Amino acid sequence: MRLSLAIVALCCLPGGPAAAQDAEAEQRAKEIEAVCSKTYCRPARTVRLLREDGSMFEREVPRLPIVLPTGWITVYPGEEIHVELTLARGTIRSARAVAKVARPNSTLTFKLSQQPGRADMQLAVSHSLPQTLKYSLGMMLPSGGQVYATASCPVPPGLTTYETWPNPVFQLVIKDLRLLPEGTPLTCEK
Image (cartoon, rainbow, N blue to C red; front, side):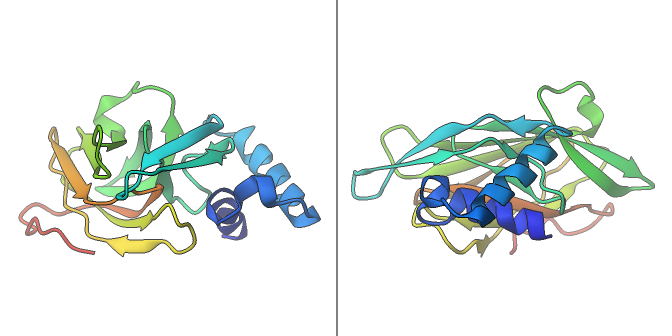
């Protein structure tokens, strides 16, 4: 858990990695690099978002794991990420990020985008798992800091669901992935 929180702190708090000059930040960067040497990570990139007032938000995001050691999945605007799951007896055992879909029946795809010329955001989620997927969802705004819980909807097999927000979102955190038993009500909730 320490590394996961360090990753969130390194990439997402106001000031970000450019302001982090101390030994602790250097240690976090080494820990992240160690994780990225063993797992697929997103490349460093610049996140640009249109704010509600028409101004632009811009923040550098360093090379980071997509699936954190806790199993949390992170997605930034402009990304389409693929997460391959290991299933056993209808339960998700593990998740790992992959560069491309090689096993469609066990891979989730998340795509976070901003609507052209608007502050609105959209998350598209699709999969071909054998059951309906549910997860918990948190969002971080461009102002940084706290991850706020937000509602998420179940994703039936072979379909794509869309989550939308009327404001810019800097990062989404997806956790508590689970398959729903057949007949479970398909409600959107936090």
